[in-house]
Length: 467
Ligand SMILES: Cc1cc2nc3c(=O)[nH]c(=O)nc-3n(C[C@H](O)[C@H](O)[C@H](O)COP(=O)(O)OP(=O)(O)OC[C@H]3O[C@@H](n4cnc5c(N)ncnc54)[C@H](O)[C@@H]3O)c2cc1C
Image 1 (cartoon, rainbow, N blue to C red):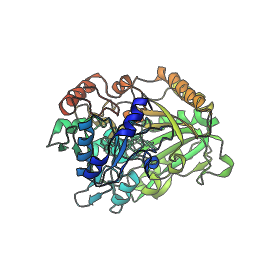
Image 2 (tube, rainbow, N blue to C red):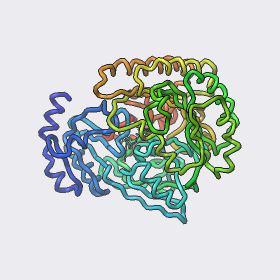
Image 3 (cartoon, rainbow, N blue to C red):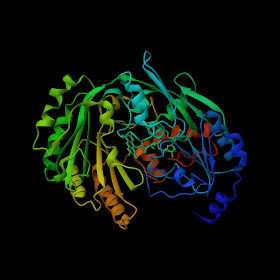
Image 4 (spheres, protein in one colour):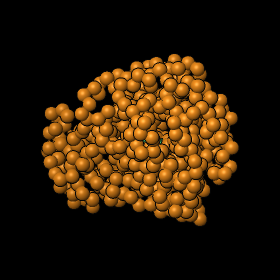
């Protein structure tokens, strides 16, 4: 924190905010401050002047006006999982939406409205009560807000599109404190922009999603193999997914087996490759589809079987707990070549921290059918999203070495990549990388929108689109 920021943090008078916000307003040295400024990535350590814990739209309007009138920088926090830590700031105001947990499912209309503080596990729980779901992330404790605003990929995407393709409307508070609704009929250009444009246009207070019949039992789960068999497995996988139906979405991951109960103890700490799949249809219809994957090689453990959708969604929770230190580098890939597979396996084999991993999502299907004109989340034609995750704990003094591993891995992937990246896998990497997430035409359209809704760049602590 600079001296200037420290002064701002210490001297901002929060009393007027306390008088206009229903939820707690927490300043430095007050109870709850350190808990309130802790986010998923433990490597982020920032000291805001205050945290406005909002309980509803009126609180958000009051917080925006308070910050705007005083020229305070504003960070917006929902699930707190953005790896770059834009949910926090030094010396400014954090508009914390995590207390906003309202969810209402309309089973007849197959829609759900959820407030911005809702996490994916919370939304799935309510929609699964009716055998419904929308396309969400693959970890229950990720926030719906940041994930939706950046696009949204997950187990259901090849059947039902990206999360933003299932967004029907959203309410948001603009930089001048005005409450707007964005949908196909109301403020359609804004609606296009928030479906991929991140937090650039306002604070979204609630989302309305389209739901689909899903589960409650789905044929899904991971299959683990030894990393030494990764080249053969991934060469087979490439052919397997080339003809996979839209119902099937797969993910593979190169890692060191974590000491979690779902894996036999003898593989804990050993390098592994995991291929996971979810069949978004009747489980009995998926059995023949996944058979080749289940029959390939000699897996360490095969958990691709019928299970509750909510169980699938929490499979990876134990391996991504809050508070560990993280550094991510991401790229998008065309269909895997032998060289790309070699590079992936080579770099995964020399990871410096046993907690690090590289995860690769299979795209295509309905996800790829949305066009540039549909949503700001574009460039849907990549075959894979790759996220290289360096992970370590606070007491591990080799953080720099783990970061260097991720950077080297990322550089080595460049010859195989198309110079694009998925916005939600970006850290705090600057404007050029944000542009890569959109491509030139989309970025220019977003700039125009930014000039309309936030010409002073009030919302700039994000993957920023400069007006
Ligand atoms: C463990 C883990 C698993 C993940 N899995 C997936 C996955 O399966 N699929 C996928 O697509 N992504 C995934 N991601 C990436 C995820 O989409 C991003 O990290 C996303 O930013 C998380 O949203 P959040 O609300 O939790 O985070 P936050 O840190 O609260 O928000 C991130 C940023 O989004 C903006 N923002 C958040 N809320 C609002 C709001 N209400 N109004 C305006 N702007 C807002 C702000 O700029 C904020 O800094 C994962 C991330 C993690 C850490």
